[in-house]
Length: 208
Image (cartoon, rainbow, N blue to C red; front, side, top):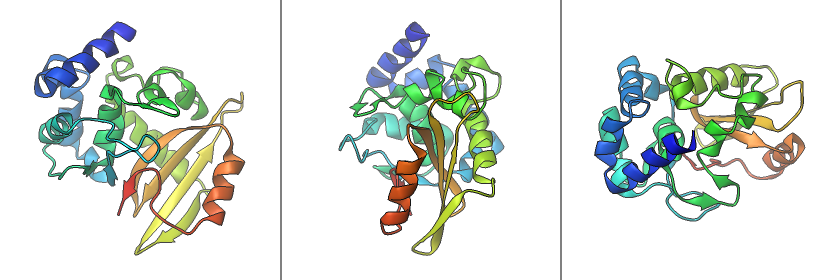
């Protein structure tokens, strides 16, 4: 796995447009998602990570991703699904929680959803990564126990779940009825306490 992802990451830094063409689990997947209209189910996100304090993908890659998907975007704000899945897979910026791509590759998030460990690995299925993640998040946020809060004129939704075998929780977040992000968290109680205590606001790099 490491050679496959490392090669794509290196290519994307030097030639982002060419990298999307050379690696079918990137370019062809984005093409399929665009043709199916899947990006419309996702909201907006900034690439400036709130923890790292810097852009998690360079502007050239940001532009190449959105051009490939046929989406209009103005740096640093773009489509959350495109950035959080395909952009994060190619990011070289470390955060306090490690590289963004690990959520799709190491199996912890997939298992928290009750799925096989490779459920979000790009080349592990004929279905695109974004398609698989969209389905998982939509199911989690549809559960009755999902929390909501009013943010401006929009409603934010938070879902948390952990597989029966334990491990981290899967967090899913949507804003204005559109998906924003999902990642593993160690403590649901801490997330919920923060959610309840702080004023309602866009979270986890979401943009209204």
